Image 1 (tube, rainbow, N blue to C red):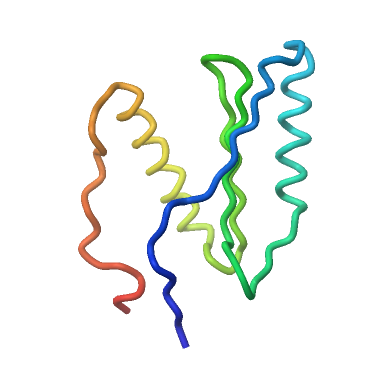
Image 2: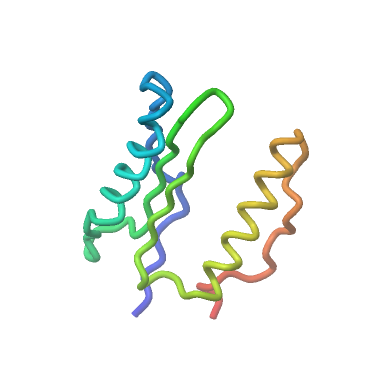
Length: 109
């Protein structure tokens, strides 16, 4: 049976590396990303999606998204990447979301 959790805010962490010497920031960001990827998910509890924003400088950040394969597939990941890019571009320019509201949700099936 399907159990749909209530819609909620995405919990994510922000890690600032801008205090490190510039030469060390990228390596530390990669280490943080690797640690997130290797951290197991608890399928009985969730969430099955983790997000971390790594601040390298005032104008440079890395977004680390880790999604359990049980909740997504390759086609869906392509959609996610396209939509995040569209939203980022719009918000960076001070515009509203360019994405239309979805007429149907997965749970509707």
